[in-house]
Amino acid sequence: MRVLEIESISHVGSILEDLFREGTSLGFMVIKAAVIFLAGRLLIGLLNKLVRRLLDKREIEPSVKSFMASAVNVVLIVLLIVSIIGALGIETTSFAALLASAGVAIGMALSGNLSNFAGGLIILIFKPFKVNDYIQAQGTEGTVKEIQIFHTILNTPDNKLTYIPNGSLSSGVVTNYNVESRRVEWIFSVDYGTDYGKVKNITEAILTADSRILSNPAPPFIALSALADSSVNVIVRVWVKTSDYWNIYYDINRVVYETYNAQGINFPFPQLTVHRGDTTH
Image 1 (tube, helix red, strand yellow):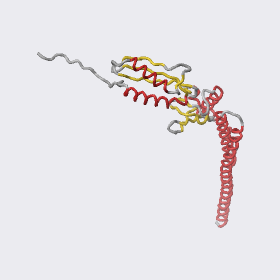
Image 2 (tube, rainbow, N blue to C red; image 1 turned 90 degrees about the vertical axis):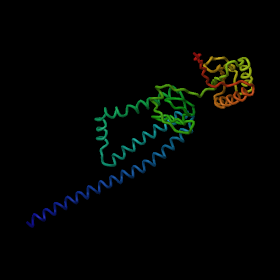
Image 3 (cartoon, one colour; image 1 turned 180 degrees about the vertical axis):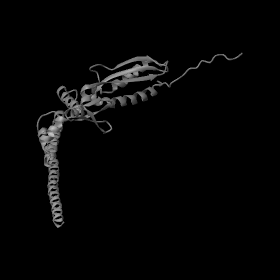
Image 4 (cartoon, rainbow, N blue to C red; image 1 turned 90 degrees about the horizontal axis):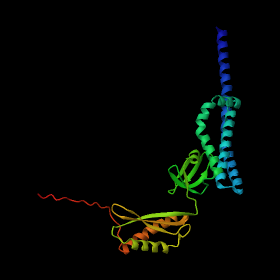
């Protein structure tokens, strides 16, 4: 019995010693992985800054700069993940084999990102827009802030950052407002019986007085566009510089309202005429 007790104690001690050794080894691996993670994050931040500085020194379009910086950041993060996996004692070759065996599932999971990456390349090659252009796409409009590897970032007029997948942008409808001049259009409604010649002359005088309105590619256009249910509609079109678009739109609205009222030209209200039959017996 004494011999069995000694053997049992020796066996338990051997197990505890193995556990201590394995635990110590595992602890060192975890600490090493944590150090690699912290150092890697710091190094990635420094390298990203260095890459951006190098790109800024080159005469490269801002769109290409943001895309390349985003791609470098993704590559560095992947390398960091592989380094951490190796520090934890997992064979990177085994890890690669595991990824290969799950290739179909991973491919399906990444198909959206792959299309977004391809969409980013298409945007850079064909340039439907670039950084600092004002665009409208996917139900959102704003100024292009960055074209990243998977997404394009728009800064909306109310200062929101909207991330739109590059795949959608490259295959969908995009309206680019970054042009030299744009056409502004108004429809002004006046009462029936109003002298159209008077309305046209007054409107022409308002437009002529504004030096921001261009005569090229076309002079201002004024026409009676519709005889609506409660009003006569006059359409006005002018060409302006893109930077003046909204200022002119709102300014002409104000001047027309004030001038029409001063000249006795009335703006109509919705009206409904009811004809009542004779109900006397």
